[in-house]
Image (cartoon, rainbow, N blue to C red):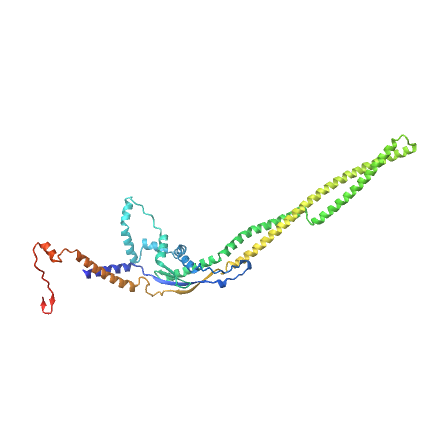
Length: 430
């Protein structure tokens, strides 16, 4: 029984070991180095000082990023691991995969029967999610080398070539994501500057068009000269008006004096005739001077309105000039910053640097790294031997035969005087 149990258990364990898909390990080592001394300030207003934060270990951060589902999904998508997983389940070709598929089908028979009876409804298999889970649990082995800043990325796959490619891809993705984190601020600033630059350029062009249109509409050459000429003309007209008002007042006084003298009872004929002859000329002068006064006042009012409009146009012109200058200055500064960010976003000046320092790729003729015969075969032999002995003792314990005189008396119902014990000796059986 012990021999048969050992052979059966050992054969069963060898069968299940055979079902394990052989895999080959590829390894990359990545150095995550705190590079505070490499903090370069390319531009004065964009330099970030390096401040040591003992609570932050970028190696541990990168470890979690390397083990993230996002990277696993990219690997599954890039290398088609979901299609390979689906083929193994639906259309297996390798005998090992065929046996696994048969065993899975047998295990699913109860669920299939319940589904046919309408008691349960099975969901379709999401091979992509299954492949991602399989990769995270069984394919990758990523750990931080103790007391170092070195991250070891190990990948177990069915061929040495595939494991090497996936290990290299994970290292590449990890470095890319680390660099993206490092350059994220500058890149965001670059994108924002690029977006705002379009608006700034449109505003600058619009203000320039408005200024040019204003110059063309009002034929602006020199508003200061035009305003000075109008003010000078206004002063001359006001001076002329003062003279006209003075002359008009004199003529009116003269006309009143003539009228008062003509109405005087004491006047000679000759004086009356002289005053009568002078009076039409004086009246004509009064009318002429009154017309000149009215015209001058109208011209002064019109000229003042023109000057007021000119001042308003001048203020609008100055506003347009200032707005165009501000828009041009903002557009120029934003364009310069964008050009600076083009350089900044492509430069590593962050809190850490990440570099690939070592790679190991299995030879195409190498033995699989998993399962390891040095581990499994001794374990299988010891386990099978232990199960065989345990099974024999278990059966022995439950067999119904007497082991003691009291059990024999109970079984036969006959008094027992003693028990004969056969023991071998040098002279024979005793």
